[in-house]
Image 1 (cartoon, rainbow, N blue to C red):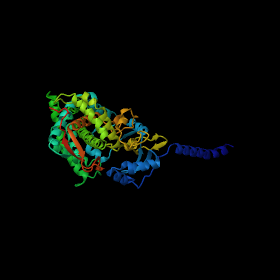
Image 2 (cartoon, rainbow, N blue to C red):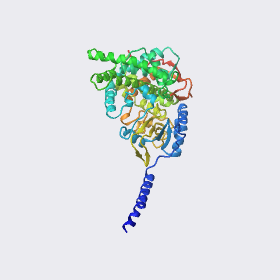
Image 3 (cartoon, one colour):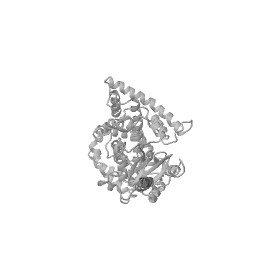
Image 4 (cartoon, one colour):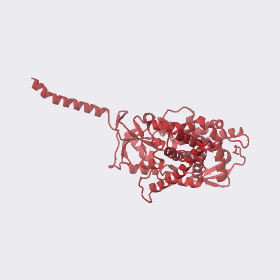
Amino acid sequence: MAAYIFSLLPPFFFIIFLIHKTFNKNTTKLPSGQMGLPWIGETIAFYRAQRNNQLFDTFFQPRINKHGKIFKTRLMGSPTVVVNGPTANKFFMSNEFKLVVSSWPTSSVELMGKNSIMEKQGDSHRCLRGIIASTLAPAALHAIVPRICTSIHKHLSKNWQHNKEISLHRSTKMITFTIVLECLFGIGVEQETMFGVFEKVLEGVLAAPIDFPGTKFWRAKRARGEIEKVLVGEVRRKREAMEGGREGEDGMLLSTLVAALIRGEITEEEVVDNVVLLVFAAHDTTSYAITMTFKMLVNHPDCYSLLLKEHEDIARNKRPGEVLMFEDVKKMEYTWHVARETMRLCPPIFGSFRKAITDIEFEGYMIPKGWKVLWTTYGTHYDEECFADPMSFNPSRFADPIQAYSFIPFGGGPRLCAGYQLAKLIILVFVHYVATQYNWSLVYPNESIVMDPLPFPSKGMPIKISPKSVISSSTAS
């Protein structure tokens, strides 16, 4: 009898194993989707859609329609799960360092810097972010508003005042670049030259990491080397001045970083890499947001009328020659609604990649350890469940509170863009000076937007400009 019972045990345990395996298979499964060709996956289709600024229409939307808001694919050699919607955004963004970590392409890491905040994890990220955020928080930015005003006024006087047509995108890139370099870091190098070098680096941040003469990545790395030499010199001069008690008022963020360097909290390499990253993060995405805001205002004159009244009311309360103060910027509520609605429809970034550091169960699906997770701005910003009539331009939708993690042009969670408040200030102040001092119109109303690697107007968005007959705005002295 005992022998008979023992003979039944193997099949019994085998049946239990099959039941357990079947149960797990039914409750935790991979999302549906197509993995495409080996290694390449759907990368070619992704890049083609990105280049034509059609990521939502030709890549994300068809797959969402077919597979739902969560689907699998293979991009740039990695199996990837694409997630959309505020629930997914909150889950993955708030679980940074716990379930997922930032995962940037090799070329981006090489050019932005291995010691930059985008590559830091856990405690080292929290430490560095705390140092940077202490300078970029709203309370700390109060004092920088007049300096931003002065920089913008000088830029407009030099580049707009005597011209009838300008490239809006290049102009906004130059002014944001200048503000970040001069006001935040106190670096007064030759702007045009340094701007051109930074642009060369940007061209390679998403290029194939092939360090061979003639490639985009090769050119970008050499440009990055030029920038590093300049910045190392600036950091060492700042350190010498601070240790010698000769620190000036310029460059509050660089002062904060160098102070942490002196205290031994961070290294010189971390200072340099984060200056590089912050210049790119602040100036390129912010300039695109400003450019598209002006395009939206041209196409929606009713919104422009409301915005203009807001700025004229502010200007009337300023004395001649008096710059804006932080309290003036706080009154630009409708302008910020316009800017946010613009960034909802035209986000400066399409999303961001993360890597699963453990097996993740989310909404009945399994995301295996080592897979990439891609959250997208489009998949949330264009979702009817988040925004009624999502393809229409309606700034007033932001007059009421919106659902958390439904508006994500600056990311969210521990990796929420540290320069979010600075970008807001630059956008609002620039719009104020242009709206109150100039008339403008688009040269190409239907100009297309392309990406390489970030979105930009294909022709630079040239605009015809003319000074207003009565300058009702304050001007910087």
